[in-house]
Image 1 (cartoon, rainbow, N blue to C red):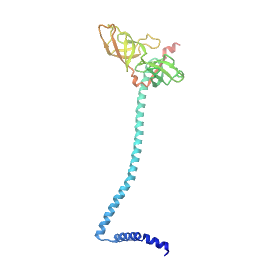
Image 2: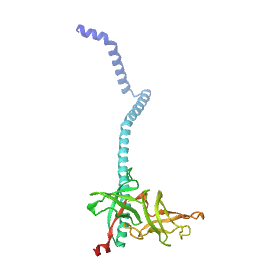
Image 3: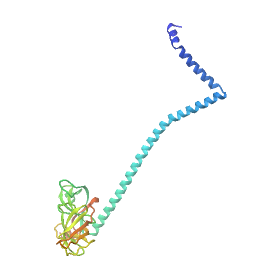
Image 4: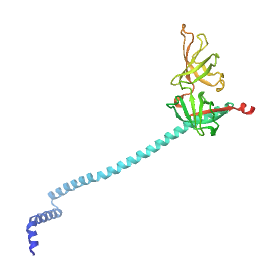
Length: 269
């Protein structure tokens, strides 16, 4: 034996003998079928099984987590599709009402979608996806099947800006449909307007519908504006305070009709 091997043997002799003894002991235990040894084997096997289960739980947990994440994504996609379908159903219903209104009235309309509302420069305004290419012009009336929305105040090639009833500067001549009492409609707050200039003794009641008077070069007569829901009767005041709820809900406004002209006007030309 060389000097180098001799030195290594002396250095690691004790360790090698210990390892050999352990291996030999395990071998003897493996071939021993006595009850104590069998009991030890069963216990060791149980511990090994628990350790294996504990180690194998981690990859299973990761697989389950990834599967849950995938299912959450799929459910999210399905939910988005349902929301979009519901929104499309609502839009379809609104467009059908507008089309039915157009067919029932002798007017030519340009259908338009509201693509924006409000501005620091133009309060109480709507932005529409139609312009002079579609036939829009300044001062054309904006409305829905419920009633008046406002009028066009600016037109470009493909877009338009409309001034709506909820603009603080907006004014329109209105008439109580039942009693024919006149007044000026002015926005107050939210979807509420006031009918100004109504004399104290004028016949005005809650529930009355206020429509356009026709005393305008812009708005045709008889278009709905709002319905009266509150009237004050202070004897010392010369005029009544009359408030009406607008027929059009401006908080949910998405589509409008641009009144181009009446069919009879077009035929006369």
